[in-house]
Image (cartoon, rainbow, N blue to C red; front, side, top):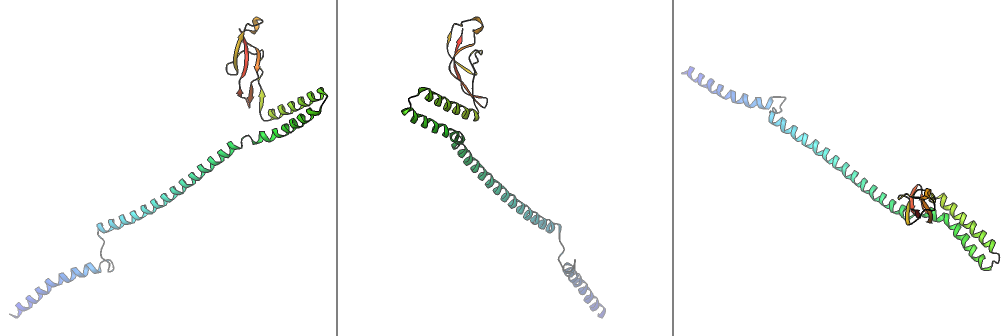
Length: 196
């Protein structure tokens, strides 16, 4: 019977021992840390990846907002500059014309007391030349039309008269209003009479 008690004690110890070993293995594997299962590793990797993507998204969103704000500021600034440019576009021309206006005022004052018509004509002629030179310096050029073939891109036909000679048919006989270019662009069409 003694043998039987010892066997029972050993069998009960054997049955208890695997339970103790199993609980100790789970605690002591990898230096006391619980062993990572593939599910835990992928969950932690997913969380880390999500955090990284979230921070990148926040950074890109911040860059986008800053770029958008810079573009809006640029757009407003250029619109303001364009309005100022349009408002002050004629400033240079007007500054150049002020001396001519001064000359006209002096000529009108002298005309009231002047008795010499030739001197007044000469003064007005000088002022006209000064005005024309100022306009030429700003890019204005007169158009020569008389004797040229009629061109609808440059001329506006007011009427047609019979041509005095055959070589003037289809050409400009007379010019009623002179045409002008501004830097090679037509700003006023010449009003002409065309020979037929």
